[in-house]
Amino acid sequence: GQNIDQPTEMTATEGAIVQINCTYQTSGFNGLFWYQQHAGEAPTFLSYNVLDGLEEKGRFSSFLSRSKGYSYLLLKELQMKDSASYLCAVRDSFNKFYFGSGTKLNVKP
Amino acid sequence: DAGVTQSPTHLIKTRGQHVTLRCSPISGHKSVSWYQQVLGQGPQFIFQYYEKEERGRGNFPDRFSARQFPNYSSELNVNALLLGDSALYLCASSPQGTTNEKLFFGSGTQLSVL
Image (cartoon, chains in turn orange, yellow):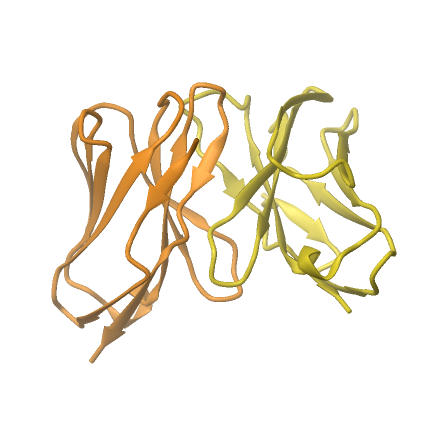
């Protein structure tokens, strides 16, 4: 079966760094995606990893270890607008996306 | 350029009724997929279509059906609505539906079943 786990909620301070972890077990693997979703809005793409290692994109970085079934999203220099849910999603070998339940990030001044 | 558009934005139905949700993908995108997002959960895969053919189906009952039209727009139909069908229904498009493509989501249709 498919299983994607991430923490339900996290709180961090403006200007700080936060790491959101995701572990997964899926039938095959064709990439791991991170999406940001503000309340009442559509998910928007943040990052994509298919090979092991770190992908950096501005204030956001994402890491993948396929052997451990593990990824994390790193957000630096947190801003109030980063308060949102962060969704970890895995694409399996049948091209289906499986999403975790999301991590609600609260950024406090 | 317009993003993925969905209609209606909100819908209220009663148990036993049926509903049709509509989605227009980004221009040039040939793959459309549908997701159900219950409050506090991540999106759950329902269907994927590419070039009018069903490419994948999630673990949803036969009450859920979909189709894709020649202009690549899509409809999701749900029959015999249950209270548990209340959710945000998201449509996503991608150019070819291949493995390295990201999904572009619409803002969704919020369905409430009373």
